[in-house]
Image (cartoon, rainbow, N blue to C red; front, top):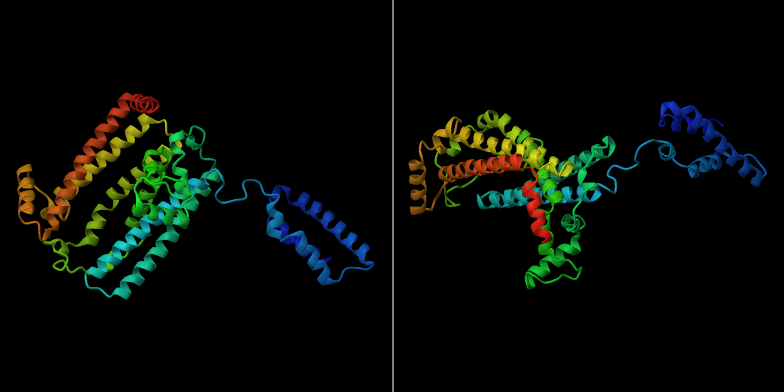
Length: 382
């Protein structure tokens, strides 16, 4: 009987306090009934080993207690699993691509191939596990906190194709690679148009929202140092790569990161918010428009800040459009070695222009509401 009490005490520690006494009494009666039945069959009292086996057959205390626990008994439920799977696969693809880039750059810059490969593998595994953990925590919170994802109730047929990608396996990848070798529009053995599957991610509201969230999370985790891709350990031979870095290698990059830390976190957070709104409230055209204005304005501010007032502004900033044109013409006239300072200047310029257009598009959505969306859906159904 001491064994039974030890068993019931272990179960009780895992039960809700409000129902603990009643459940333990119920379990005691059920187990004692089984013991009596077994002793009647044997015609004697149970030995310790037999009693322990009976308790083992009844179930581990963790499993038994779980039967009486309120709430879902899973981390990622069936309703969210396809989206969790898509987020995980997308995050893994990003991590693998970055690891390959780091490996290639290290190899081309004259580094030790074995060391570069080991570093890429290490950063890839660590980053992948981190991203899977964050995706699982996000899905767990959505399940437990009852976050209303409007898409689950108002989904569109055009979003369904993205589910194919969520359940891709290695056979599908092999089929896709074989299809790419034969004809672009061939139908693979699984019956999928794989090129359509990739396009469906961009066309699907849900796929686009998840992709934006995953991309934003990856960027913000990298920016705050929770993800390490191995860029800091790269020693680049710029001349061998046909690059002219100018004075950029002499920049105090840790100080620059500290200088830009807050603005970049705000920008990445705005992206994550935008993707979340797409998932939670896909019909919120005006809300998305307002966030688009914020994202566009942040892009313009960041580009202007880096090019005009940051510590690298003297290297990559321009005082006028004429100076920008002069740099571009000089680059066109002598493209090799590639001037990195000019490349950064062009990136900042196009970032600012893109930010302006995104803010204007957001302003249009904010003013017009669902007009644009209704017109798009009408055109698709025509």
